[in-house]
Structure formats: structure tokens, C-alpha cells
Image (tube, rainbow, N blue to C red; front, side, top):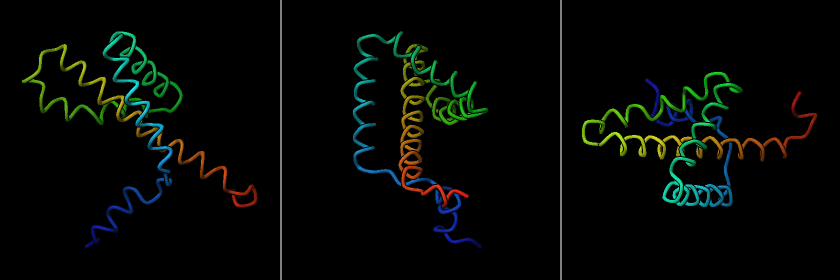
Length: 121
């Protein structure tokens, strides 16, 4: 039987390191997005859906994976929300997953920057 540490390593061990600065950048983006949702919800929703569409078109199934990641949470509360509230929650959850992916991407960019060309072979 595998230890919890082995299970978690298999799930997350290859993920890049992220810095505190990266976390702060993404927290600021999340805060700005919340303001955007308050001031221009239709445009904010369109921007998230455009990101999902781009992922689908350029990164195979990643856009579908982002959507699949939020569906169980939405299913748990769907009977307690109006459609408008459900839709707003969906957009916030999708944006949260997108921000996590951005963090991973930033970590990969940082890792790539420190890997020497000879090390990539």
C-alpha cells in the first residue's frame, strides 16, 4: 500500500515551484476580476469563456478539463441557487481554476528560464 506522501507526490510531484510574488500577482488578478464581475458581469463572463475556448482550441482537452473541474461543486448546490446565481458561481469557479493554471504556467516559465539548453536534451 502506498503512503499518503507517495500518493500526493504522484498527483503533484512534477508541478513547478511558484513564488510568493507569483501568488500575489494572481491574487491581484482575482481581485481585479471580482471588480470586473461587479461592474461589467457580461464582459467578465465573456472573457472567462474566451479563455476556456482558447484552451480547447490550442491545448486539446484542457478547456474541457477546466469545466469538468467545477461541475461537481456546481451540482452540489444547483438546487439551492437561482440560475443567475449558479451562472455567476460557475464563472468564479472557472476563473479560479484558470488562475491556478496560470500559476502553474508561471512556474513552468520560471523553471524553463533556469534550465540550461544542455540540460534540456
